[in-house]
Image (cartoon, rainbow over all chains, first blue to last red; front, top):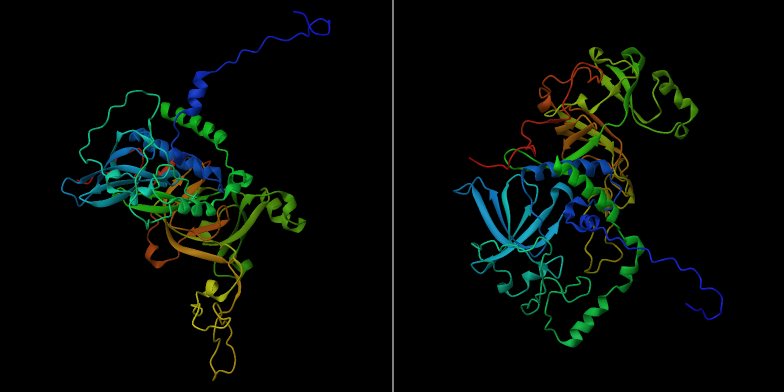
Length: 246
Length: 242
């Protein structure tokens, strides 16, 4: 190799091999239920440790499957007033809230033209069975806008058979754009604060532009709002895997 | 605060209280204190010796115990006297007992009469001139004075208050945590005083508590978690109604 100056060419070390450890990558991206991540605050971490111990104990006895917002679930709860002493409800999960033992999820379904939403507690001892019937993620984390969408998007057959899951890898994302009932809605879903991608807005252009007035573009650069959970998540994942193997 | 479920599926909210380095500091006899019963001074939560002045170090030196952030008195009968320097643990209480919890409430600063005393204020419109959150009248015409103790704006909070009759659901002996029913005055991680309940309904509720206290170096070996009979433990399967 001849360099332009006539001097001997500078020693260039060979490129370092990039080692992609698939096992650790898989560990990092494995599902961690959102209620395990402690919220930001000044509470003693001992309190979250005690709650996590109880949550792990419950998970050892009762299987809580991995599910996201947008999955269709069937929940069987114990009810002292029902004839069979148990109630079964099928619905799409529209929201997962709460941290720790009080974690909840809201299931929505339309039964005989009446929209029904039931908020269940994940760790309540009344829940006897929790089956995932259809696995699909949606474009948003919060599907509350289904209340103002046409009822066909919230109806699910009560006797639906569980859809068999093909791969153990990806959960399909349903890029469905939902059509809405005419305005007024319960919330102004076109405003940028809700950041909804799953609605097909059929509003005129000037209304969509007027909604942009409420956008707060500085929020994504606000450093005080950042809450980096990667290290906390890694610790909790390690703790979980150790405890569940016992 | 955390949820807790009973065997019948009902949910109760529970506050976690940690017993952090509690030691008995001094025994004050009935004649010395001038009260009706003997007193025991108890201190909690270790703190650096520079946070208190030298004259306050004496009690802790006598007892042979590191400096404590808070010192409280408990009125004790003569058969329940404990030697100064003994540590106190969460196992002093048992599940099923009823307990009073005292703490300083969250300080709200100088507050107006609507927040402090719950006055209704005045309407927002219909001609009110500069009067929406004011107290209105403070006394009558005939009195021709303002009585002592009239509710007026002032500093709210940061005073000692007690919640009575709270049930103890669970005790963790490894981390010294008491799970107490309902809410407790004070902010998170504040110092709190826990006593046996003085309410007459719970007078007979303490069946064989550890008397005078639970000694760690004794023969008793307690399991890590002590539960009340009605609590749903997560090791059991889900609740079914027969």
